[in-house]
Length: 221
Image 1: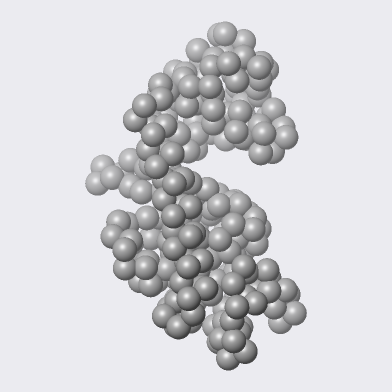
Image 2: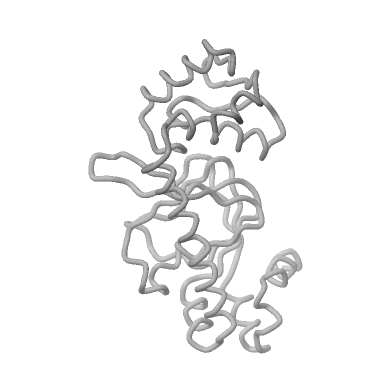
């Protein structure tokens, strides 16, 4: 109970809630755990609510009829997202998927309580639209990368981004996983990594890539 209250009190709008609203949130929220690869939210699932990542990484993506995935953005520890509350935000008219990249724990304010908050508290409603705008900007950035940036630059940018995020030159991902993150095909990723390897930028073996020339990758990106 104390752990949940501690996390709830970190929400930017918590101090703007009335006592009854705080009680509502506390009663209708809880921690949920998802194993790596588990779908957290999809077009076929029930409306979840507002999600805050406690531990792990969540990838948000859209999928074509042919099954091709386009990654929109990722959520890390401390990040909050309202796309899983699409039943609350009527302006969300496209289907998104959220999957656990590794073992995850999230704090969820359930959709019914979140809906009441957005209807009755202007601070929560403003925060919801602020989050939506932030994620829309991330989506537009992803679309810009896909439409206007050559794949060698996109791949180099992704590899450098993972290096800067983890602090390690070793990236434990398969070609398929990188393809999902870069919204490409596995075969395209494999060909480009082979080119990078021949240029001395990376070394790779099954499931692992080592960045051997970080400055060279930065120049490409």
